[in-house]
Amino acid sequence: MGVNERTGPVVPQGATVVGPYVPGFRAGGFLFVSGQIPLGADGEIVSGGIDAQAKASLDNVARVLAAGGAGPEHVVKATIFLVDMADFAAVNSVYADFFGGHKPARACVAVSALPKGARVEIEAIAYIP
Image (cartoon, rainbow, N blue to C red; front, top):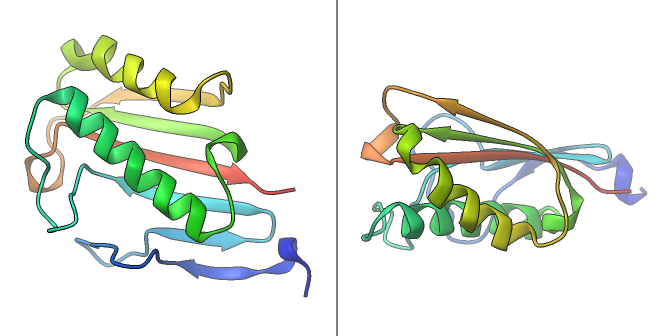
């Protein structure tokens, strides 16, 4: 079976899941990364401000990507959910550092609340040629 023919759940080692879903799902050449909130290895929201939360969310995205055979350079679409749009500039800076010169399509949406009191959640779609 070729790489692009694989289909099924992607769950990184030690992943914390807070609902009835998987962290990622591979469908052919696509990897859909569920929204990642800033959970640390202990399953709790990381301490620190929005910068720390955005970095932790993206680190969790990176773990799912790696478990599915991809990296940030494979992301074709990302969505950011923010509880406070005043955090947009700070999250944008962390996001830009994470992706470097790669710039996938993106949306940023304000929401009233996120699981476990998180201030940011990030989901992604990757294409693995």
